[in-house]
Image: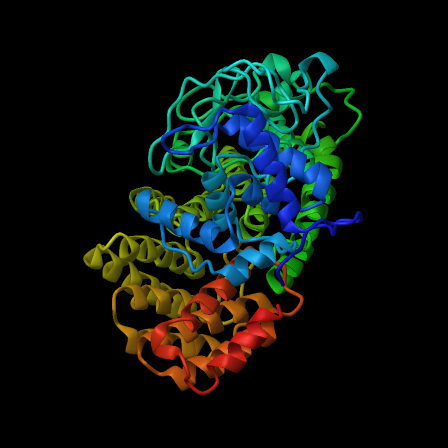
Length: 570
């Protein structure tokens, strides 16, 4: 189901009231460009704030009214932005825009586009919250806009002097600089803005001090994981995933960290860790993973992160032997990977990327090749989803290389299918076919009863789903539908969320084969499966289906109107 924002509790004025505020403030400021009519970002920000304070509208509507757009004009501007910056086309309509202004949260990709369109942050549009302490009185803005200097601009949450060294072109993202680190932000910022320096956020410096990339020296892995988990709990920053950050995970970790940690452990440490604690983490990870697989990553992610930072942290920082330490690191790597998968399924790609990188680091330090390869697979799948094609292929190849000596057929099938998917996305048919064949050979010799492997969940049904979509990308729609049929009816995928995704994909394949009746049938089943699931991927599949139902060739087709009506109620 699509989440909604909080409903306003105070009276809401008509849109005409917001338009009058805009006209009055434009007349008072006199700063609009005489030739183009363009309004400075300073003024647009201030107008939006005034409309919010006076009229009670939600932030997105305030931004639209401040820009002087009708809903139709806003939709047109958004599509114009997508075209101008050569971004992936989106199926945004006036109906969906009105839903967002009514409180329905758009999917993460659309949130990013809206932030680009209005040149602002997710917090300013009501898509995220800022939990950092309020700025000191001397550093906040007045709501009065007249008399501001040219280098001072309104920024919600309020820091004063504003100047940016960067300019932005198509497909570029801003970079938040904290200390010596650059954290990419997934939305476009105007040239006249910057973010606060580290000195302006004294309570946040520990959150980002240990997130280096590339070959730079890392802080201790345990401290890095804990800081990442704590920053996730506080949700202070909007992180965007990048191909460069994903590739940086391939730098080799320190293989001797556990040896040094156990050698330097204080004999009088408060917590002594044994196999009982390792077993507890393993069992909890399994339980949380089962819940997420059934109902989506949004249901239990906060539980996984709190368990990591509050319960597991004392054990990671405790005293243990080298053998126990390796078992502990391997098990915690699974928990961290699960947190990353949950974040990705919830639509938080940047946070997911950081978790996958930390899982890879911890698994390599534990000397566990399969867990390290699985963490890389998470990064590779993310690159595929975000269309970082070269990075997806490179990381998938490393994933397969890491697993080359494993005696676990399901794991081999898992990683080769990912490489096939990455290569197919990149248009490399030869590599895709070779990897897909290797994946099929491995899954066919996998034992019927899953073992204790972390990849044991990769069943023949899941393989059939993934390979079906690889075949669809390669243009073999007959074989693709056959594999998706195997996933649903022969192997019987066993999780509600997984079944929903297979049904959504099968509808897409049938539509491409011009089997409209078949597509309508499975899409109705898909809608039945979405009830109770909190997954951004399922939401994205729902929006993809809704966009396809508006195709010209489907207008007036029997069953389409009823399906659209069902989809619109979700």
